[in-house]
Length: 103
Image (tube, rainbow, N blue to C red):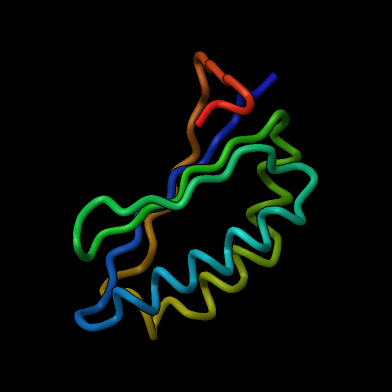
C-alpha cells in the first residue's frame, strides 16, 4: 500500500524552462528503473515552476529514492537550472485511487 511520498518544487532560472523539461524527461527514464518507486509524476505548475510527485510503499523505498540517481542528478544540476534550491517535502499519503490503464 502506498503510504509515503515526496513533492519537489523546482523554479527554473529565466531561459532554462526547456532544459528543466528535458531534465524531467530524463528523470522519468530513471524513475522507470527504480523498483521501489511505483508512482512518479513530472508536473508543470506555471511557466517557470515545475514539480515532481512520487510515492512509495515503504519509508525505505522513499529513502532509497532520495539517495538514488535522480536526486543526485537533481542536486548536480541545481545551480545551472534552478533559481533557488529545490524544495523537497516528505508527504504522508492518506488515500489513493489508482485506476490502472485509464487514460
